[in-house]
Image (tube, rainbow, N blue to C red; front, side):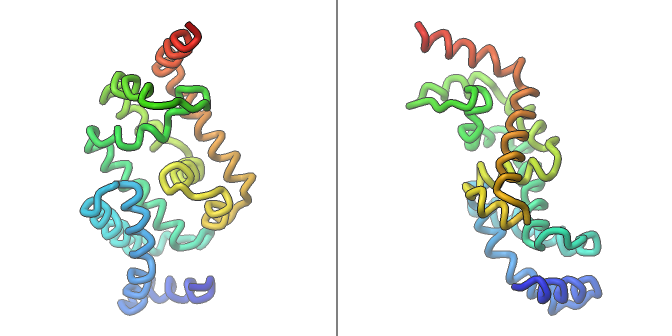
Length: 201
């Protein structure tokens, strides 16, 4: 769907054109569902997330300002819904914790399963705080980070989706990780220090 066609569909949808709304749903749903499956790891949850995203997007279509592609705007709604679901289902957070290992490993990688006890030791409260911290990131930083980490998109792909350069994507990912690392320095630092002293022994 080209920019001109998308603008026309949006204007018609804003005017209450049911046919235009149906076209938007049919075109966006497959991509949103695929993203939701990668995020949620569960088909049933992913379908609910994708459908709720479209419902909310159509209800709020008047607030879409056109500064990004329609999919990017709806993707942000999907991310917020998913993160809210994670906070409600705290026991599922460990499914994605490995993506943030470098937040408390200084950006380095670890082999095998040595990280697992540390993730378990963080406990549900720490996981809840982590997701709150991610949710509190500025919108551009949060969306960019999650597209790179959970969507496994390249900087080039994210840049195209968000309408910015690869350098901007790299900067946002770097700053998002720095903001999260700073917030969790006191909580996660001792675990990292213990690992470092153990590895150096």
